[in-house]
Image 1 (cartoon, rainbow, N blue to C red):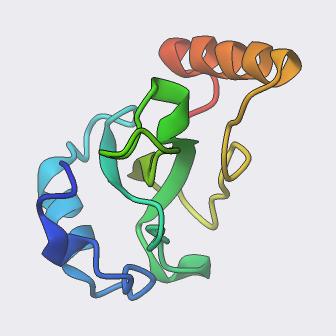
Image 2: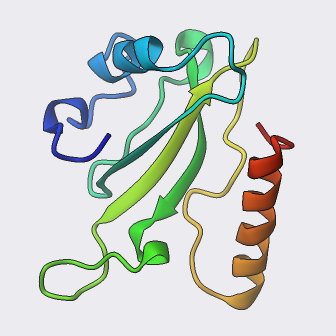
Image 3: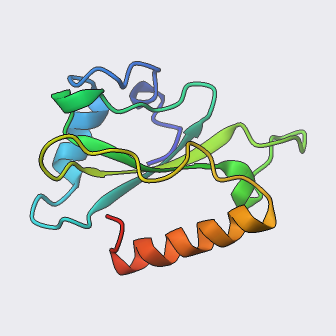
Length: 124
């Protein structure tokens, strides 16, 4: 789902009744604990899941578009980010990665390891 669906990315996603969560409720298979939604949108209004126990989804990753070579039309730093959400698995679930994965060799190695863990389902 991309940023062209602006109504879903209105800066009000912390509300558990927001349309985005209803949409994900429909799209993500309840029987698949590894089902995720990958969303691209502007970083100026970050998507936030509802706090505490009020929401049914958890933020798994938030990745700056710069990591994918995304740039603005003028060639500047990306104003987009990629976020990955999945269903909570009982109780309160927490974000499993830093808010942004950015440059630096050590951080890139950590990101690669996180991606390997994600692919194998170890951190979901």
